[in-house]
Image 1 (cartoon, rainbow, N blue to C red):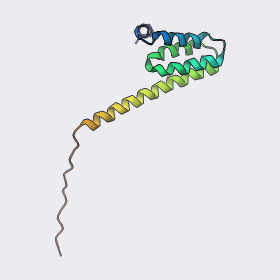
Image 2: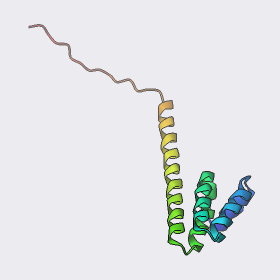
Image 3: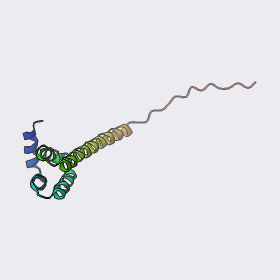
Image 4: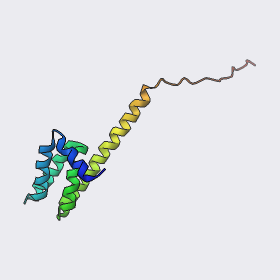
Length: 110
């Protein structure tokens, strides 16, 4: 999906103002710790904030802020993997359990 489309979708959502505010803080704050804190807060918005984090990653020159962005993106990826795994496990449990046929041979008395 195009990055512009993602940003448009982001703007339509209810959290867009807060995400935009955090993104601007992460991009333009003079304090490196404040930038990292904003990135950490962006991860709370999940995949909705991914384009903002990627934008900060592309624009920043600070290695520690870049690392914070990469960690946030990895975190979002693990969260997505967990959700997928969880959904797959739920769908497996909804199926009727398979009954195993027992083909045991009766032992003869000697």
